[in-house]
Length: 189
Length: 189
Image (cartoon, rainbow over all chains, first blue to last red; front, side):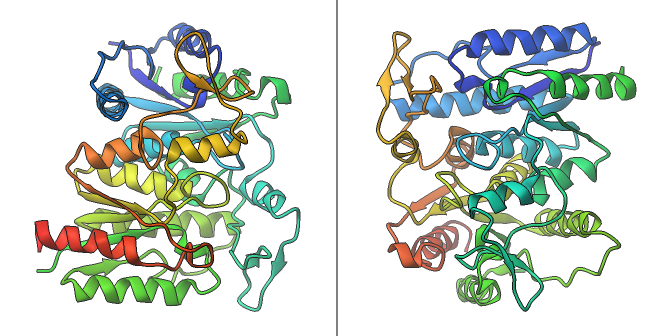
């Protein structure tokens, strides 16, 4: 039986969401695995938008429960950080002890992106922490994301891929995604 | 034995992080529960920043594994969305079937904040989705955050509190946090 991988990421929000999910699914199959994508199942109507959202949550969690692992797209989304839905899903899969891998299409690491959020106005304070003008400290751990995400993957022996995609291909470039598939195939193929 | 709650949120980044964590811990004890806070344990030094980050990840996961539940502060952090570390932790606790609750100190819901990200330039396209000028769709489910987070809590019978804190008290106002404690006490006290 082929291992099943949940393909987490902000692709579901793209104008060409279906095409992107299909492309990722096809690539996953080409490496011998079974893809499970949010958006694959038709959700039946609900009386309110809120209840419809709850149904999607139930379907996506069920998909994760059935999956053997996750490949999470942590490319920054609407800001400097990963999509919080994807962050939730990565935590969910880490807690279940599944096979975890993650990637980003942005070369700047978490510290560099957060520094950018403060336009570089980052100083080291007496406690040895780097802080922005608002006094908030910045994580400076040479990681692609907040330490819970990056650490959660790395500490489990998972794989993290980084690829500097061109700005217009930020959410469509599959180089780093494929690097995750290659890693999974080499370990669990 | 008092139930143990992991107090997740971006407080660890505040200039007065220790004071805020102590205040939340004291309030948690006042409701009869044992608080477990990231930042409570002194992490021993590591040869590199990266390895130090991994140690914090291990300590925080261990805290979550020992906790009976989580109270997650989803107040938007450095942008329109919750701190991704907190999102990861909420997913982690949902997957473990723990007692889950979450709050935000911002009254605007997820759809309103995302609309704000696009300066209100949101249109409904032929497929019935609301989309920004970049073509990305917006979740419109009357939820405080991405449906995986809000749905993950609500579908488990968890509690979600919203309080419109004043801007200067965005990360220090504990009204909504206390509402979560009151709910936990009424259900699990």
